[in-house]
Image (cartoon, rainbow, N blue to C red):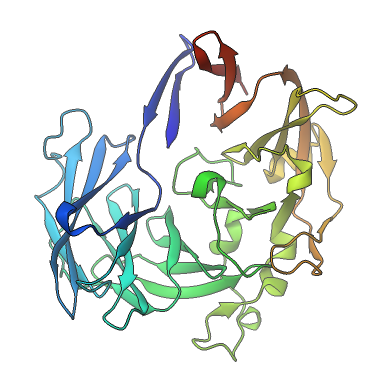
Length: 383
């Protein structure tokens, strides 16, 4: 997936590629073992997962290595490689789902697959990549629906997006213990969670520096759900939990969602469904009203409470009502999270490929046709 690094002084744009998103690996026997790489450029560390190291009826082992991105040498803060063991798959598994998240010294690795009965199962390890000396089988394990992706909020909290439409909140304060499930938040749909091209992107509603650890927006098939990160840090009232649920950790949408979320229906955005998230802001491109050509105008929604209080721009407090929730076509979902909406003067008459931003700079990637074919262009803006 592309990522842009912008020097605001020289306006130089360095476009790199990295593997920071969940992946599905087909287990071709002739290509075993496989390698998955995760890069954290803030710390110049590349996490390399080599799997499987060993597979039997009881476990699935993989090796974790920490390298310097530029040189490939062992990272000076790490203490060698580490072999982890979890009940994630069997020797006959045809494919493995893998996801990695890093924040400071904390590392989370998710491995999902099938057991000998062809049932889905997975394991989730959380450890310190700088002190990888803990027990190799210390992990959370589960059967049934797998996870789509994982993200650290802070070192002590990890969220996981479930393939059956839940957000799992794990307590990871002590890496010497297995991740502890704190709550499962339901969403107003039943289906897979994904973002653009299968990703989830960071959104920080507290106006902190934008980092991959903050809670992301979730792109459904026909809408985007913006969720306030604060909801995952508060002490959840006991009345919010559904005591009749299997584990007693279920938080129903009606308890937490409407006041802490904002749905952006797809018809609000452009047909390509490209958008970008940075800090507390969401940027998207939509057709210019009254035009029949492909001219697009940028729009911004800022969910920072201080921006809403200042009222710079169009403050929206009225609810958004959507009836386009996937698989529940007759369900009406109403959300109330306040925002400030701004339309930019800048327009584009070329296809928008991607949008990336932080608190200070926005880069809009566009494609235009030239004699030699398609040409990618990075348009840099100061926020």
